[in-house]
Length: 313
Ligand code: SF4
Ligand code: SF4
Ligand code: SF4
Image 1: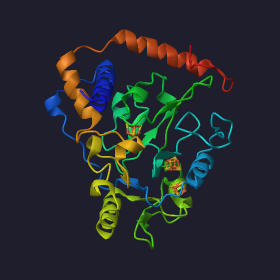
Image 2 (image 1 turned 180 degrees about the vertical axis):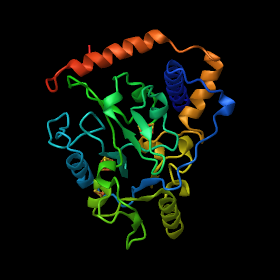
Image 3 (image 1 turned 180 degrees about the horizontal axis):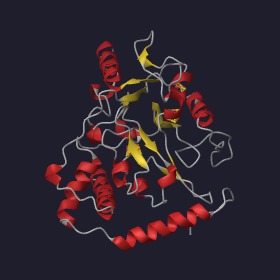
């Protein structure tokens, strides 16, 4: 079994455990693969256009009112990976002469493992846009979503008295209630001009926002226009892990950029199959619910602010 297969299986088992704890034990045969909603919104990131300026990192931090993050060597606003203060990061892959930038944030999976693992519905996929949003008011900090995500996206605020999950929500707070229309560049835009902050500021259109089907068309157009430029003439996210609403075009192997080689089935789909094999309709562990409810109550009683290393005790 390869490392990737093993990692996917472990995540599937974590997810299966979460779903079983929630008492949701549908039969594997009844779990059809999910389709993106008709108005699924997303982003297309193209490594061949990115110059690594990190304007998107700064814009994301501002638009989401996140505290400035620093790199381990003390550089301001230079996070090396996603973390409790960073929803979007630009990384550099370099091997000999070969190099590429890589933008990482939530992939807004068509069948999100995080939402499948969340017992209390804090993480939910919007039925219209497909954006995977987070409502902290139900979150008990169990971190099942952290374990389940095949892209290692959700991060936990370990240094907060009342820690929550941090992840990109496709800037849904900036576009809520607006009606979509097409912009001059052909991509879907909102009349007030607000889309995801990272896409708005990108000086190279290395990351663009739009409907998933339009973005797929655009990706295929770029591949056809530039034969040999893109890795395997492939759009990552079209089918990987059941499909994602954030899509990638790259000039180097996707695995080098940290994108896992997933099958065409979503992690929840795999998980329910595993779960059916393991639990066979096992009754939800009520005691676990009791513990989680106690944690939630305790978290709510704690005052805001104040550092706490190592997460909730
Ligand atoms: S990338 Fe991870 S956090 Fe984002 S929707 Fe998919 S499973 Fe959830
Ligand atoms: S969509 Fe918004 S939250 Fe997500 S990476 Fe872009 S700026 Fe950050
Ligand atoms: S703003 Fe655009 S070009 Fe600059 S780092 Fe982000 S994606 Fe790349």
